[in-house]
Image: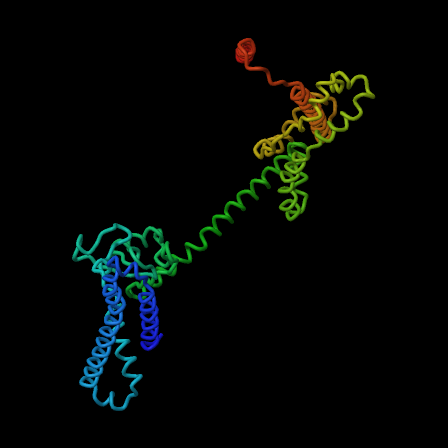
Length: 389
Protein backbone atom coordinates (compact mmCIF):
# COMPACT_ATOMS: atom_id res chain seq x y z
CA UNK A 1 0.00 0.00 0.00
CA UNK A 2 1.52 3.36 -1.07
CA UNK A 3 1.61 6.63 0.85
CA UNK A 4 -1.11 8.11 -1.36
CA UNK A 5 -3.47 5.29 -0.46
CA UNK A 6 -2.83 5.80 3.26
CA UNK A 7 -3.39 9.52 2.85
CA UNK A 8 -6.73 8.92 1.12
CA UNK A 9 -7.84 6.56 3.92
CA UNK A 10 -7.04 9.13 6.59
CA UNK A 11 -8.87 11.86 4.64
CA UNK A 12 -11.98 9.70 4.26
CA UNK A 13 -12.00 8.95 8.00
CA UNK A 14 -11.56 12.67 8.82
CA UNK A 15 -14.42 13.53 6.49
CA UNK A 16 -16.70 10.99 8.17
CA UNK A 17 -15.83 12.27 11.60
CA UNK A 18 -16.51 15.85 10.46
CA UNK A 19 -20.01 14.90 9.30
CA UNK A 20 -20.70 13.13 12.60
CA UNK A 21 -19.64 16.21 14.56
CA UNK A 22 -22.00 18.46 12.52
CA UNK A 23 -24.94 16.17 13.33
CA UNK A 24 -24.63 16.65 17.04
CA UNK A 25 -27.90 17.87 18.52
CA UNK A 26 -28.50 21.31 19.93
CA UNK A 27 -29.10 19.86 23.36
CA UNK A 28 -25.57 18.49 23.42
CA UNK A 29 -24.16 21.84 22.31
CA UNK A 30 -26.01 23.71 25.09
CA UNK A 31 -24.65 21.23 27.70
CA UNK A 32 -21.04 22.05 26.84
CA UNK A 33 -20.18 18.94 24.79
CA UNK A 34 -18.97 21.17 21.97
CA UNK A 35 -15.68 21.42 23.85
CA UNK A 36 -14.85 17.90 22.71
CA UNK A 37 -14.50 18.97 19.06
CA UNK A 38 -10.96 20.31 19.29
CA UNK A 39 -9.85 17.03 20.93
CA UNK A 40 -11.33 14.99 18.08
CA UNK A 41 -9.66 17.17 15.49
CA UNK A 42 -6.32 16.77 17.26
CA UNK A 43 -6.79 13.00 17.33
CA UNK A 44 -7.45 12.92 13.59
CA UNK A 45 -4.58 15.21 12.68
CA UNK A 46 -1.99 13.47 14.87
CA UNK A 47 -1.51 10.30 12.72
CA UNK A 48 -1.37 12.49 9.63
CA UNK A 49 1.44 14.52 11.17
CA UNK A 50 3.30 11.35 12.21
CA UNK A 51 2.94 9.97 8.69
CA UNK A 52 4.47 13.13 7.20
CA UNK A 53 7.34 13.02 9.72
CA UNK A 54 8.16 9.35 8.97
CA UNK A 55 8.00 9.98 5.25
CA UNK A 56 10.43 12.92 5.51
CA UNK A 57 12.79 10.85 7.69
CA UNK A 58 12.82 7.98 5.18
CA UNK A 59 13.56 10.36 2.32
CA UNK A 60 16.44 11.94 4.25
CA UNK A 61 17.89 8.48 5.12
CA UNK A 62 17.74 7.45 1.46
CA UNK A 63 19.57 10.64 0.44
CA UNK A 64 22.30 10.03 3.05
CA UNK A 65 22.79 6.39 1.95
CA UNK A 66 22.99 7.43 -1.71
CA UNK A 67 25.59 10.06 -0.87
CA UNK A 68 27.70 7.56 1.11
CA UNK A 69 27.54 5.01 -1.69
CA UNK A 70 28.55 7.70 -4.23
CA UNK A 71 31.55 8.75 -2.12
CA UNK A 72 32.71 5.15 -1.53
CA UNK A 73 32.51 3.94 -5.13
CA UNK A 74 31.88 6.75 -7.63
CA UNK A 75 32.67 4.69 -10.68
CA UNK A 76 30.37 1.83 -9.72
CA UNK A 77 27.57 4.29 -8.95
CA UNK A 78 27.88 5.99 -12.33
CA UNK A 79 27.88 2.71 -14.22
CA UNK A 80 25.23 0.93 -12.12
CA UNK A 81 21.47 1.33 -12.26
CA UNK A 82 19.55 2.98 -9.41
CA UNK A 83 17.97 -0.32 -8.46
CA UNK A 84 21.40 -1.89 -8.06
CA UNK A 85 22.52 0.82 -5.68
CA UNK A 86 19.44 0.41 -3.55
CA UNK A 87 19.88 -3.44 -3.37
CA UNK A 88 23.50 -3.13 -2.33
CA UNK A 89 22.66 -0.74 0.47
CA UNK A 90 19.89 -2.97 1.77
CA UNK A 91 22.07 -6.09 1.73
CA UNK A 92 24.78 -4.22 3.62
CA UNK A 93 22.34 -3.24 6.34
CA UNK A 94 21.05 -6.80 6.64
CA UNK A 95 24.56 -8.15 7.06
CA UNK A 96 25.30 -5.64 9.80
CA UNK A 97 22.04 -6.29 11.67
CA UNK A 98 21.76 -10.11 11.38
CA UNK A 99 25.45 -11.10 11.62
CA UNK A 100 26.37 -14.26 13.66
CA UNK A 101 27.42 -13.79 17.23
CA UNK A 102 30.68 -15.60 18.04
CA UNK A 103 30.53 -17.61 21.22
CA UNK A 104 33.90 -17.83 22.95
CA UNK A 105 33.00 -21.33 24.29
CA UNK A 106 32.94 -22.72 20.73
CA UNK A 107 36.72 -22.33 20.44
CA UNK A 108 37.36 -24.49 23.50
CA UNK A 109 38.51 -28.06 22.99
CA UNK A 110 37.25 -30.96 25.08
CA UNK A 111 38.82 -34.43 25.13
CA UNK A 112 36.07 -37.06 24.89
CA UNK A 113 38.31 -39.63 26.63
CA UNK A 114 39.52 -37.77 29.75
CA UNK A 115 37.08 -34.78 29.54
CA UNK A 116 39.94 -32.29 29.89
CA UNK A 117 40.13 -28.86 28.21
CA UNK A 118 42.86 -26.52 27.01
CA UNK A 119 42.99 -24.89 30.41
CA UNK A 120 43.73 -28.19 32.20
CA UNK A 121 46.86 -28.98 30.18
CA UNK A 122 48.29 -26.28 27.97
CA UNK A 123 51.14 -28.43 26.59
CA UNK A 124 48.91 -31.35 25.51
CA UNK A 125 48.76 -32.30 21.84
CA UNK A 126 45.28 -32.30 20.27
CA UNK A 127 43.96 -34.14 17.22
CA UNK A 128 40.65 -34.24 15.31
CA UNK A 129 40.66 -37.85 13.98
CA UNK A 130 37.11 -38.22 12.58
CA UNK A 131 33.96 -36.44 11.38
CA UNK A 132 32.47 -35.94 14.84
CA UNK A 133 31.25 -32.50 15.90
CA UNK A 134 30.75 -30.75 19.20
CA UNK A 135 32.28 -32.20 22.35
CA UNK A 136 33.50 -35.36 20.56
CA UNK A 137 35.41 -33.44 17.90
CA UNK A 138 38.76 -33.13 19.68
CA UNK A 139 40.81 -35.62 21.67
CA UNK A 140 44.26 -35.72 23.19
CA UNK A 141 46.93 -37.48 21.16
CA UNK A 142 47.90 -39.58 24.20
CA UNK A 143 44.30 -40.50 24.96
CA UNK A 144 43.56 -41.60 21.40
CA UNK A 145 46.81 -43.60 21.39
CA UNK A 146 45.66 -45.56 24.45
CA UNK A 147 42.25 -46.05 22.82
CA UNK A 148 43.87 -47.45 19.67
CA UNK A 149 46.11 -49.77 21.72
CA UNK A 150 43.06 -51.13 23.52
CA UNK A 151 41.26 -51.83 20.23
CA UNK A 152 44.21 -53.29 18.37
CA UNK A 153 45.11 -55.70 21.20
CA UNK A 154 48.72 -56.00 20.11
CA UNK A 155 48.03 -56.20 16.35
CA UNK A 156 49.83 -53.21 14.86
CA UNK A 157 48.11 -53.38 11.48
CA UNK A 158 44.56 -53.69 12.78
CA UNK A 159 42.08 -51.02 11.68
CA UNK A 160 40.39 -48.88 14.33
CA UNK A 161 37.27 -46.75 13.75
CA UNK A 162 35.51 -44.05 15.74
CA UNK A 163 32.85 -45.48 18.05
CA UNK A 164 30.47 -42.61 17.24
CA UNK A 165 30.65 -41.92 13.48
CA UNK A 166 32.46 -45.17 12.44
CA UNK A 167 35.15 -43.20 10.63
CA UNK A 168 38.34 -45.21 10.28
CA UNK A 169 41.30 -43.52 11.92
CA UNK A 170 44.27 -42.57 9.76
CA UNK A 171 47.17 -44.25 11.60
CA UNK A 172 50.61 -43.54 10.18
CA UNK A 173 53.61 -45.55 11.35
CA UNK A 174 57.24 -44.47 10.95
CA UNK A 175 59.56 -46.34 8.65
CA UNK A 176 61.55 -48.83 10.76
CA UNK A 177 63.62 -50.45 8.04
CA UNK A 178 63.34 -53.59 5.88
CA UNK A 179 64.15 -56.02 8.70
CA UNK A 180 61.21 -54.88 10.81
CA UNK A 181 58.93 -55.15 7.76
CA UNK A 182 60.05 -58.75 7.19
CA UNK A 183 59.55 -59.64 10.85
CA UNK A 184 56.08 -58.04 10.82
CA UNK A 185 55.14 -60.04 7.73
CA UNK A 186 56.31 -63.28 9.31
CA UNK A 187 54.43 -62.49 12.51
CA UNK A 188 51.24 -61.77 10.55
CA UNK A 189 51.51 -65.02 8.59
CA UNK A 190 52.03 -67.01 11.77
CA UNK A 191 49.08 -65.28 13.37
CA UNK A 192 46.84 -66.29 10.46
CA UNK A 193 47.93 -69.91 10.09
CA UNK A 194 48.04 -70.79 13.80
CA UNK A 195 44.24 -71.32 14.06
CA UNK A 196 44.35 -73.61 11.02
CA UNK A 197 47.22 -75.61 12.46
CA UNK A 198 45.48 -75.89 15.85
CA UNK A 199 42.25 -77.09 14.22
CA UNK A 200 44.22 -79.64 12.17
CA UNK A 201 45.94 -80.96 15.29
CA UNK A 202 42.63 -81.32 17.11
CA UNK A 203 41.06 -83.12 14.12
CA UNK A 204 44.08 -85.43 13.79
CA UNK A 205 43.95 -86.24 17.51
CA UNK A 206 40.25 -87.09 17.28
CA UNK A 207 40.87 -89.20 14.20
CA UNK A 208 43.71 -91.26 15.70
CA UNK A 209 41.73 -91.61 18.92
CA UNK A 210 38.85 -93.03 16.87
CA UNK A 211 41.25 -95.38 15.03
CA UNK A 212 42.69 -96.61 18.34
CA UNK A 213 39.24 -97.06 19.83
CA UNK A 214 38.10 -99.01 16.74
CA UNK A 215 41.11 -101.32 16.97
CA UNK A 216 40.54 -101.95 20.69
CA UNK A 217 36.84 -102.59 20.04
CA UNK A 218 37.65 -105.13 17.31
CA UNK A 219 40.03 -107.03 19.64
CA UNK A 220 37.49 -106.85 22.45
CA UNK A 221 34.57 -108.13 20.40
CA UNK A 222 36.33 -110.71 18.22
CA UNK A 223 39.07 -111.67 20.63
CA UNK A 224 42.60 -110.47 21.16
CA UNK A 225 44.39 -112.97 18.93
CA UNK A 226 41.70 -113.16 16.29
CA UNK A 227 41.40 -109.37 16.22
CA UNK A 228 45.15 -108.85 15.72
CA UNK A 229 45.24 -111.46 12.98
CA UNK A 230 42.25 -109.89 11.24
CA UNK A 231 43.79 -106.40 11.30
CA UNK A 232 47.18 -107.69 10.10
CA UNK A 233 45.59 -109.37 7.09
CA UNK A 234 43.35 -106.43 6.22
CA UNK A 235 44.30 -103.64 3.83
CA UNK A 236 45.77 -100.60 5.67
CA UNK A 237 43.46 -98.26 3.75
CA UNK A 238 40.44 -100.27 4.89
CA UNK A 239 41.66 -100.07 8.48
CA UNK A 240 42.26 -96.31 8.27
CA UNK A 241 38.75 -95.79 6.94
CA UNK A 242 36.87 -98.58 8.72
CA UNK A 243 38.23 -98.35 12.26
CA UNK A 244 37.20 -94.68 12.85
CA UNK A 245 33.67 -95.46 11.69
CA UNK A 246 33.14 -97.85 14.63
CA UNK A 247 32.74 -95.13 17.31
CA UNK A 248 30.73 -93.02 14.86
CA UNK A 249 28.28 -95.86 14.25
CA UNK A 250 28.01 -96.53 17.98
CA UNK A 251 27.14 -92.89 18.68
CA UNK A 252 24.57 -92.77 15.86
CA UNK A 253 23.00 -96.01 17.12
CA UNK A 254 22.79 -94.59 20.62
CA UNK A 255 20.91 -91.56 19.28
CA UNK A 256 18.08 -93.76 17.98
CA UNK A 257 15.20 -93.45 20.48
CA UNK A 258 13.63 -96.87 19.86
CA UNK A 259 12.26 -97.03 23.42
CA UNK A 260 9.79 -94.19 22.70
CA UNK A 261 8.41 -95.95 19.64
CA UNK A 262 8.10 -99.22 21.58
CA UNK A 263 6.35 -97.45 24.46
CA UNK A 264 3.75 -95.84 22.19
CA UNK A 265 3.12 -99.20 20.52
CA UNK A 266 2.69 -100.95 23.87
CA UNK A 267 0.30 -98.27 25.11
CA UNK A 268 -1.99 -98.89 22.18
CA UNK A 269 -1.99 -102.69 22.53
CA UNK A 270 -1.50 -103.17 26.28
CA UNK A 271 -5.21 -103.83 26.84
CA UNK A 272 -5.01 -106.95 24.63
CA UNK A 273 -2.20 -108.60 26.62
CA UNK A 274 -3.07 -109.41 30.26
CA UNK A 275 0.56 -109.34 31.44
CA UNK A 276 1.15 -105.83 30.10
CA UNK A 277 -1.84 -104.42 31.98
CA UNK A 278 0.07 -104.70 35.24
CA UNK A 279 3.15 -102.92 33.96
CA UNK A 280 1.36 -100.44 31.67
CA UNK A 281 -1.94 -99.51 33.38
CA UNK A 282 -4.20 -97.59 31.05
CA UNK A 283 -7.46 -97.60 33.02
CA UNK A 284 -7.94 -94.50 35.14
CA UNK A 285 -10.93 -92.92 36.76
CA UNK A 286 -12.89 -90.27 34.94
CA UNK A 287 -10.98 -87.45 36.66
CA UNK A 288 -7.61 -89.09 36.00
CA UNK A 289 -8.51 -89.71 32.37
CA UNK A 290 -9.48 -86.07 31.89
CA UNK A 291 -6.28 -85.06 33.65
CA UNK A 292 -4.16 -87.34 31.43
CA UNK A 293 -5.64 -85.89 28.26
CA UNK A 294 -4.40 -82.42 29.15
CA UNK A 295 -0.93 -83.56 30.26
CA UNK A 296 1.77 -83.13 27.62
CA UNK A 297 4.07 -86.06 26.90
CA UNK A 298 7.11 -86.48 29.08
CA UNK A 299 10.09 -84.60 27.76
CA UNK A 300 13.32 -86.54 27.66
CA UNK A 301 16.19 -84.07 27.22
CA UNK A 302 19.10 -85.22 25.11
CA UNK A 303 22.45 -85.21 26.92
CA UNK A 304 25.51 -85.26 24.68
CA UNK A 305 27.78 -86.59 27.41
CA UNK A 306 25.32 -89.36 28.27
CA UNK A 307 25.03 -90.42 24.64
CA UNK A 308 28.81 -90.37 24.15
CA UNK A 309 29.55 -92.33 27.30
CA UNK A 310 26.82 -94.89 26.65
CA UNK A 311 27.95 -95.45 23.06
CA UNK A 312 31.66 -95.82 23.84
CA UNK A 313 31.06 -98.11 26.84
CA UNK A 314 28.65 -100.39 24.97
CA UNK A 315 31.30 -102.86 23.60
CA UNK A 316 32.81 -103.35 27.07
CA UNK A 317 29.40 -103.83 28.67
CA UNK A 318 28.37 -106.22 25.89
CA UNK A 319 31.52 -108.28 26.43
CA UNK A 320 30.88 -108.49 30.17
CA UNK A 321 27.22 -109.46 29.70
CA UNK A 322 28.21 -112.09 27.14
CA UNK A 323 30.61 -113.70 29.57
CA UNK A 324 27.96 -113.68 32.31
CA UNK A 325 24.87 -114.88 30.41
CA UNK A 326 26.37 -116.84 27.51
CA UNK A 327 29.43 -118.45 28.97
CA UNK A 328 28.73 -121.73 27.16
CA UNK A 329 29.29 -120.17 23.75
CA UNK A 330 32.90 -120.55 22.64
CA UNK A 331 32.98 -117.88 19.96
CA UNK A 332 33.97 -114.58 21.53
CA UNK A 333 32.24 -112.61 18.74
CA UNK A 334 28.93 -114.43 19.13
CA UNK A 335 29.11 -114.21 22.91
CA UNK A 336 29.77 -110.44 22.81
CA UNK A 337 27.04 -109.90 20.20
CA UNK A 338 24.45 -111.79 22.24
CA UNK A 339 25.57 -110.01 25.41
CA UNK A 340 25.10 -106.64 23.70
CA UNK A 341 21.62 -107.57 22.47
CA UNK A 342 20.66 -108.82 25.95
CA UNK A 343 21.96 -105.64 27.60
CA UNK A 344 20.13 -103.35 25.15
CA UNK A 345 16.89 -105.33 25.58
CA UNK A 346 16.99 -105.38 29.39
CA UNK A 347 17.98 -101.75 29.58
CA UNK A 348 15.22 -100.78 27.13
CA UNK A 349 12.59 -102.70 29.11
CA UNK A 350 13.50 -100.90 32.34
CA UNK A 351 13.55 -97.59 30.55
CA UNK A 352 10.10 -98.18 29.05
CA UNK A 353 8.70 -99.12 32.46
CA UNK A 354 10.31 -96.07 34.09
CA UNK A 355 8.91 -93.70 31.47
CA UNK A 356 5.44 -95.17 31.82
CA UNK A 357 5.51 -94.78 35.60
CA UNK A 358 6.69 -91.19 35.25
CA UNK A 359 3.79 -90.52 32.91
CA UNK A 360 1.31 -92.07 35.33
CA UNK A 361 2.76 -90.05 38.20
CA UNK A 362 2.46 -86.88 36.15
CA UNK A 363 -1.16 -87.63 35.26
CA UNK A 364 -2.12 -88.30 38.88
CA UNK A 365 -0.46 -85.28 40.44
CA UNK A 366 -2.64 -82.59 42.05
CA UNK A 367 -2.12 -79.06 43.29
CA UNK A 368 -3.36 -78.88 46.88
CA UNK A 369 -4.85 -76.00 48.83
CA UNK A 370 -2.40 -73.98 50.87
CA UNK A 371 -3.66 -74.98 54.32
CA UNK A 372 -1.90 -75.92 57.54
CA UNK A 373 -2.75 -79.60 57.18
CA UNK A 374 -1.44 -79.78 53.64
CA UNK A 375 1.72 -77.91 54.62
CA UNK A 376 2.37 -80.38 57.44
CA UNK A 377 1.73 -83.32 55.11
CA UNK A 378 4.05 -81.84 52.47
CA UNK A 379 6.86 -81.35 54.98
CA UNK A 380 6.40 -84.88 56.34
CA UNK A 381 6.69 -86.36 52.85
CA UNK A 382 9.81 -84.34 52.12
CA UNK A 383 11.44 -85.45 55.37
CA UNK A 384 10.65 -89.10 54.60
CA UNK A 385 12.03 -88.73 51.10
CA UNK A 386 15.25 -87.19 52.42
CA UNK A 387 15.67 -89.96 54.99
CA UNK A 388 15.13 -92.62 52.35
CA UNK A 389 17.63 -91.07 49.96
